[in-house]
Length: 97
Image (tube, rainbow, N blue to C red):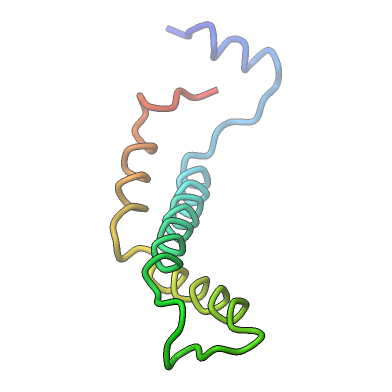
């Protein structure tokens, strides 16, 4: 039995949904989201001054760049990304268009 959404999609000549591509894109976005969370944690947790980043005119820029790279490297290790991916990839959470 075809539901109304499928009939509408067929009448509009919409392309078929490729779940593999969608899941890969979803995983990439959940990884980026985790990276943002980790960067926010690093920005708050890192000391304002220290041996790694001594007081200098460009310290804030270097600290931001350092935390950005650290957050990218740490992504996937905390489990936020996988938890969010598992939840959002369930079929009943986000209905197909």
